Amino acid sequence: MIDDAIHAEQNGLLGRAVVDLAQKTGMYQEGEEWLKNSAESFRRAGIPVYIDRSEAVLRDYWPLPDTILYFGWYTDHIAGALSLPSFQFKRGAIACHLHSFSASVIRSHDKAWVGPLLSHGAAVTFGNVFEPYLSLTLHFDIFNKRLLEGYTVGEAAWNATPALSWMNVVLGDPLYRPYGKGLGAKLGSGTDRDYALYQGTVKRMAGETDANIKNALTELAEKRSSPQLLELTALLAALQSKLPQAIDLFEHAGFAAREVFDMIRLQLYRAEMLRRTDKADDARRLLREVLKDDAYKNQTARAAVEALLQDMGG
Image (cartoon, rainbow, N blue to C red; front, side, top):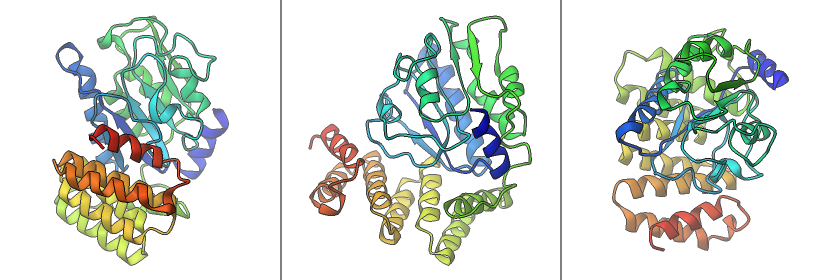
C-alpha cells in the first residue's frame, strides 16, 4: 500500500474513475448524490468516468481497465466485476464501496469490502466497522473534492467524516497525496500519455462548450491515431447523457482498435449505450455478432456480453 502510494506520487495517478450507482431513493438519496457529485468532480478534473446506472453492482466480467478511483454501493460482500480474480486496480488506486459493515472484516479477500479491495490492489480504502447510519459515513463527494484539490488522504478523509470516534476506519498511507503536484502534472508514457493529454485538454478548455471540448479531443485522437482517446471522449459523452454521440465514438474507436481485448470492450460499451437509448434490438444484434466472432472466444469479457444479452432477453 505504501509503495504503491509512493509510485503514484512519483509517476502520476493516471487512469479512469468508476462510479457504481444503486438507484436508491428516499432516505438513501443522499448517498446517490455523493456518487453523482463525485463523478462531476472527476469530469471537471479531466478524469474519464464510467458510471454504472443499474441497481445491481457492476456485472461479472465487465471490463474496467486502468481503474484508479472506484466509488459505489450497496452489497454486504464484494461481488460483481471487482470480485473476480482477474480484476486488478491500477497502482495507487483509491476505492470504496459504501455499506454499513464494509470494514467489519479486514483481513479477508472475499468478505465485506475493505479487505477484498486491498487484495485487488487498492492503495487506499475506507469503511465502517459497524452500522454508522448513512449521514455519519465518510462523504464521498467531499473526500474526492479535497483529494483533487491536492490534500492528503488523511486530510481529505478528515474533512469528509462528519463524526469522529465513531464507526469509520481509513486504511492506507494518510500522507498519500496523489494530486499534490496538481492535476496534469505528469505527462506519462504509453497509454498513460492519452490520459494525461485528455486531462490537459479538458482542464485547458474548462470555460468552453462541451461540444468544443469533445471536438478538440476527437481531433487529438485522430492526430495521434489513438482509439483510447476516442473511447475516453465517448465516456465523456455518456457522462453528459449524450448517448448517440457516445455510441458513434465507441463505434469509431472499435474500428481503430488494434487489440482484441479493447475491441470487445468497445463493442460491449456500445451495446450498453444502445440499451440505454431504448435501441434494444440493435444492442442484441450487436451482442450476438460478438458472440459469433471467433476472435473473441477466449476473452474474459465475453462472459459479460453473454450476461448483458441474457438480461435483455437473449
